[in-house]
Length: 175
Length: 195
Image (cartoon, rainbow over the protein chains, first blue to last red):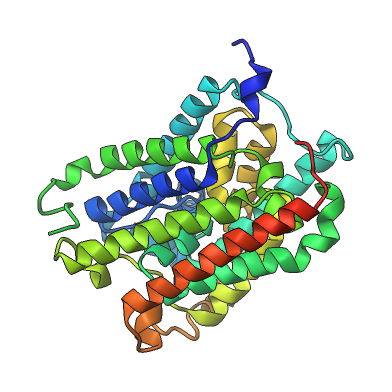
């Protein structure tokens, strides 16, 4: 696909994007009674994989076992379908703006290898932390705040607070 | 009265609806620039506050909408899925997530949009998430007590402080508008970062 460098870095007005996102979230609650999420899909994939490899192991661990309650299969979780949707939606948007192609994005001051190692580390921390909070920025903070839940507000404050707390030490990765 | 699933729309549609809502969510996230880690972390270094603007606008739009729908009797806001306020686990988890945010540059949802447009750092971040989930799940017997501690239940902020949800929402909106204005001033003073 031909890349149009003029359009590549033009994003929507943030308030417009936020408003639409809010409407989508509202619709999600109205239709399904639940919010949007993302980390839950990774949890479903992990649990299903571990279950396939070692079924007795997942039965003995309450954290895994909870996801099988009532004969459920983790991989058919609502969030797995929703995340497949996110993937498609992002691809459509990125393709229309000439942003869909393979690359590693990083600050010119660091190497791609360094970027990838820190992406792996950051992902692991995010995945680990999200389990404590029962969700990530979308599932716990955004969806939680939409229904004014105390947990959602605490999650938002601690995620952003935590990030500001450590931002100084990792500034060379970004600026 | 909402939610429309399972009474008005049959539950078989649930997964189809999940994909459709996901496509809309992913489209808006990507169009807002959230597939770019360098744009996302700008909020922590003061050169791009898109995250703050999009995030607060979305949360406020959704909650004002829900308050109206609740008022008109279209949906019972208290019955919707909230996040049980397990105070200390959420704080600890949130701080770990914050550390993950400034090192990895994504959060789980935005990393999926990055995967969608072919960013390899997004793929690696998602692999990291799975490692983190796996480690947590395996450690769960050790963490179980803490995980279930300090649970105040699914309580809303206005309930907890015994105030009107409408006035609370007015307060949140005022804070957001002040934050939008202040961050605009900060960005003007900070050196532009090209990304």
